[in-house]
Image (cartoon, rainbow, N blue to C red; front, top):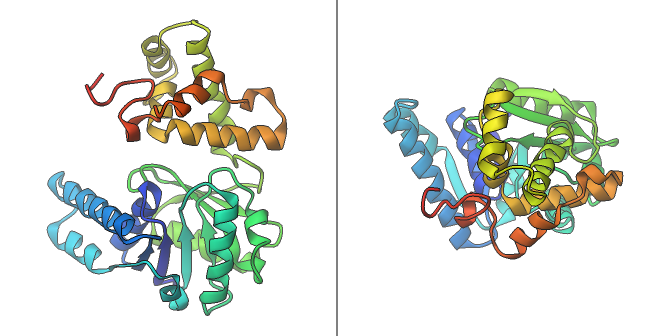
Length: 287
């Protein structure tokens, strides 16, 4: 069973993946490009674990044990002995390809899976940047990672069966996730359905069909959704929504994936949702 894992990126997704892996008993090495980003990510993990203790979800002993399993670095060279690596950095294809090419050369076990948490980019394109494409696979977690049980497993055309089995087994048997298998097509399963839904809600606001509050209430009470689409878009990040929409629209040419002008303008204005304090809702004033 995989024991030594690596996480590339200590942001919202990378930090969540690292936290879950450490709580599950893995030896976790976390990388960020700059020390300041690494320190910020470490602090967020510590805060999340502290909250879990406060809420009675985790004992103080288990928190301390999880923290002891976490190591932080700004050097990719430290990943040489990792048995599985999960990448969760910016959704930029060229940057991801560069990181995977480096990891492929550094990680000594050439069968150790190198997994991308991309939500929309082609796994095959990332694999094409490596000398060992059979070890590259998509492992797409959902935010917040410590709470949501799902993970999408996405093999590329060149991904080996052994890589699929190792990655899926780690996600399910170690991390306790429910795994679903998706083709390497932009959006995979969840975003293939979710993105047009979110964009439709944005268009409804744009066209004055209803207020944002009534749109969200309608889907919560009329469709039993835990939150409305505009609240969800704010949580995902409006820049992320726009980026995924652009990638999927380019791949499929389907107008349902076209980014609405309102969403584009909000991103240009820096209104990115919860992370910026303002999106469709104002989080600085609690509105």
